[in-house]
Length: 579
Ligand code: COA
Ligand code: ADP
Image (cartoon, rainbow, N blue to C red):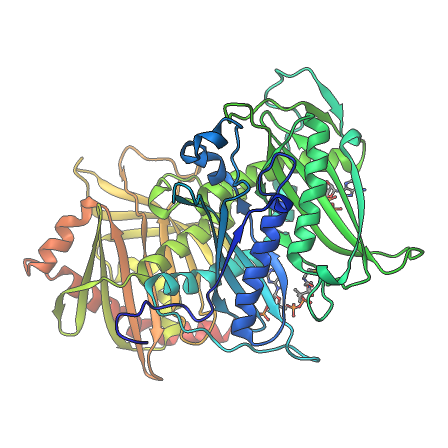
């Protein structure tokens, strides 16, 4: 790179499109279907730039379009008076896509969409999306993509968290199935202030599309974006049939392309309103493919769920008529839509909020376990990827670093040990043993084994609070093995609340926002262990007294940790061999 030249990710692809009348819906706004096609094309080109061969869309994660609604204030007056939330003819859509991480044959592509008003020069972000593309390079067998080397802090963070998103994505169908079976399904509408009840049947849409060459890539595979656009079209018709108004798409739940479709295929798209809530409705869409008109067997290509709202003149959501589901599948979908609404809200709240905005008191329950665990690991990975850590003090190769950000002072303590990374990982992830080396811990009880890698502990601390009582903590510990060579082992901790462990008057309930270990196998013998803590002001004294040399507590604790690991490493190896 030349001096002064801005670094640019080699996989980054940009698309800028002027919105023309042919891209808009009946209200003169950019149609979401068109936007999905542009998003898919840009992302696919980025994936192909990295893969060096044709790629197909495997899935697109949830997309939230809320920002478009909020942007109404900064739209020029001539648009506001039409009550428009979307970009209109003459404005520009800018899409940026780059590969965040390559796995084996698949890649995660991050996509950023912004709108630009050429008259005022204003730009605003509309949505962020993540899509997975699979390389189709080999005629037989799976392709192994070359790894990606992230350069900037943001790229390192996205690269690291991509592994966590992939974990969640691949478990999505099972998670949803599990949550739907375990949810207490609600059958009554929460707000009965609407007398109109529309039979769901009246919203049913069935539409067929013939896949032609312009809908497909040069190998004849239908573009994922084209299918998404067709799905959005039938979903909008179904939603309009319920509300007799023009609905606005608010969220799209994950699209998973189960199987390919080619030029010449007929795609049968079916949509119906599954349930209507006070101000929103869920429309389900199902896509099947068949080759010839007489063919009876059909391939299931995709199913998706979209949430629509109806906005009034002021941009406020209007009340939506109730739906009466059909007996059988309709009633099941009606109940499942209610459950999905809760899941969606939990997920959006826990995942899309920045870590610092999620309150510490997030209650743990079965329905948000996957998202809290994601939030736990991704918060730590975000802290690890930060580049402005400063070495604050060092004693005998045990180093303490600090990171000052806004109201947070984070610290990291690091040392290299002669131990295997896997041994350190298992020993440090079990909080029941921590009192053996950390004098702040009195004891830890395993309250719930959520799954193989997520545990909830009730920790009693030795540290006395300002109220002159010892502290206790309820901590979710999430551990992850490396997804690839070069990745660390990660053990993340965050506070949660659990009904079975309410605050106890004998203790002051303490909270940890984000802390944990990252463990790197440096050489065959040496492992680097780093402890991270994003500390609220309460920890200030601990950090500053250590930095100022008034205490060497961090060194004493880490040396005790080293002795603990050395003492127990063989025991854990035997345990691992017996697994
Ligand atoms: N989301 C993200 N990635 C997924 C996924 C999902 N829901 N399901 C599978 N994958 C990934 C796997 O993790 C794997 O990645 P890796 O090689 O990096 O480990 C890769 O896809 C292949 O998975 P595999 O299990 O070997 O194959 P599969 O039989 O599940 O096929 C597809 C996956 C995506 C290739 C297959 O479902 C397909 O061809 N779908 C249609 C794709 C298409 O044509 N899209 C355009 C519109 S039709
Ligand atoms: P599920 O029935 O579990 O929701 P499907 O993949 O069968 O999953 O369907 C996805 C969605 O597509 C359904 O929730 C429904 O909204 C819509 N759908 C499915 N079949 C039809 C149909 N025959 N007519 C109209 N809409 C349908």
